[in-house]
Image (cartoon, rainbow, N blue to C red; front, top):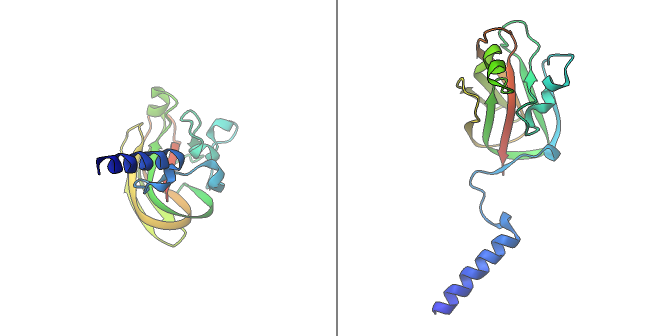
Length: 172
């Protein structure tokens, strides 16, 4: 009996090592660039490729979406369109320009944002003035895109631009 338990445990671990996707996904898997059809935005700050909206899911905090808005960034948006429908579990956002501490302080950060999913579901979220990933739990929404619309911002000390350094989307 003891040998049977040992063999069962060994077989379980071998199976997981060979095919880790056989385990239930509790938090989901992070969406990859290959899962994205395109990324669109209301605007981006021109004349510098570091500020383009396509950088929000490239895994690099030094490349940032900077909205080209001379106001407070309200109603600026970025939309991620997927190649197929996914069930979204969680979203992580790095709020603001996190290239360095000075850039973070000088630019606006998002205070409130509206998430709009392709099925019409909306979710209002609040973000903190914090340069680390902030995670939002999503209630298993099946969608093929997400639009992130700025509702309000924390003002920067110098520039009127609203920034997002990175977004992670966890899906099933």
